[in-house]
Image 1 (cartoon, helix red, strand yellow):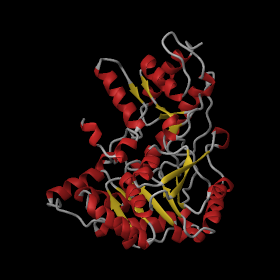
Image 2 (cartoon, one colour; image 1 turned 135 degrees about the horizontal axis):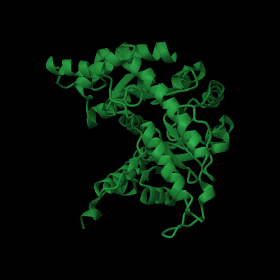
Image 3 (cartoon, one colour; image 1 turned 120 degrees about the horizontal axis):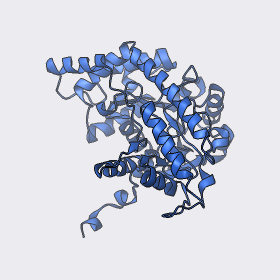
Amino acid sequence: MSSNLLSQRVVRMAESETLKMSQMARELKAKGHEVINLSIGEPDFDTPDAIKQVAKDALDAGFTKYTPVPGIPELREAISKKFKEENNLDYKASQIVVSNGAKQTLANIFLSLLDQDDEVIVLAPYWVSYSEIIKLAEGKTVLLKAGIESDFKVSAEDIEKAITPKTKALLFSSPCNPTGSVYLESELKAIAQVISKHPGIIIVADEIYEYINFTGKHISIGSFPEVKDQTVTVNGFSKGYAMTGWRLGYMGGPQWLSDACNKVQGQITSGANSFSQKAATFALQTKLPETELMKTAFLKRRDMVLQLLQEIPGVKVNLPLGAFYIFPDISAYFGKKSDKMEINNATDFCDYILQEAFVAVVSGAAFGADECFRISYAASEAELKEAVARMARVLALLK
């Protein structure tokens, strides 16, 4: 009876596949199985000690009260400076809104932008929550998908063809979750030129993996003058600083949109955690060697896992240039069987890997690419080697 009382908004919402797979992995682990969990997008490194110390000092100093809805002034100033110096983005502190993670930032943006049936072009493969957040805001997701042969990157020409009078926004991540793909400067320039012809469209650029970029230089699409006033840049502290549990994300965008997001957040959560913001301010203002060390470790792991995956027949990989994911195409296994099940899609594939190899990975269906699966290499080298070896063993049993 009680389920009948739920809103259709919640009923229509899909459960996060990444969190669901992590839960299944925990359940198997609780039963005594040695599960290797490569399903979650979380650095396995600890938050740098210097950042933690600032938070402890803030607690000891009694900095534990409500904060301004869009963030404490010193953090917003630090973010404004970071945008200018690192990204060539000119956002004043008043254009910055700090939220409880980049996920809330995205929700604020789309609740502010979308009316019923407004369209958002989402470049796929895409992060699992994009479409559900858009749906929650009563918008419609228009997926534009690219495959492994194009490094999972959608062309500016395809974006232009997808634009309609209902298009309100374009959403993508670079470096990308789940593929690790990075849109290069020439590719972003071409996209900017297309969107600049449509002043009613907002670009929502998710740059949460900015510091895990192996190309040598991160490029923000908002730095192109033609779309400066049409771009909102989303970022946070979880990936680059290993601060996932601190729950801090932020955005910089046109003043009118920042004001709207401030208004939305003021009615839902108010300001983010006080002492976390003190620590985040320090993180932005300090050159921390740990961030570079993490990136170096991720690059080494990427190369190792790629080499191991390439040795498995039927697994097709490309070269991801950022984040900490590989997104192999495993469609060659569709139609193959074990004694217990048949592999008809990526979800079957991941279920098989979990049940038989005790390795948790995520189906590409969750990201708009049913021929692939996502493997996170945010784990130790020993775990990664063992995980791929287990996968190779059970895949060899399929006929």
